[in-house]
Length: 158
Picture 1: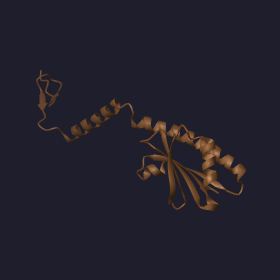
Picture 2: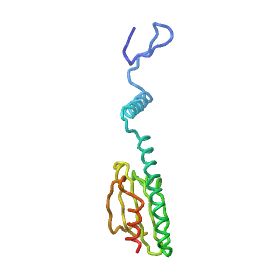
Picture 3: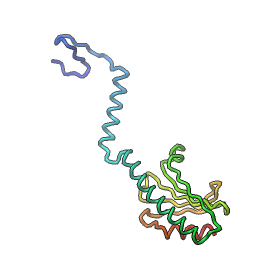
Picture 4: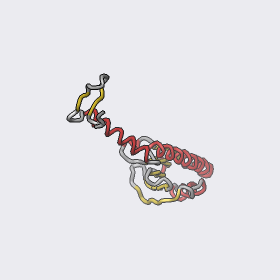
């Protein structure tokens, strides 16, 4: 019996066909299999990244929403709008999710950015609605609290 991979086995024992060149389908199939094997070997696959990012985005959005409520209680004249950018940045080719807090009367914006490559960090950018950034900083996601976000809003939106 031939054990070479370029032989195909047919029903009668003596009849087999030798493939001199692998077909296009065979090479595509082998590429797909190699990608699947690499993904299975990698414990941190794309699915796990998306799940972690969704959890972090949810936690961050709850912190920002609570901070926004506290800020509005003290500053009734400053209307703010919260926006979640979870798909728009990815469509632009950026592997990140973001939450923005816009103060429309002052034309100011704070953006909290969560990168896939840095899952434990959050980038905070202070700018305007046109996208100009005046300052930015980076914090550990664990240290970011509701009071911290309220302080950012009080300092920047006044």
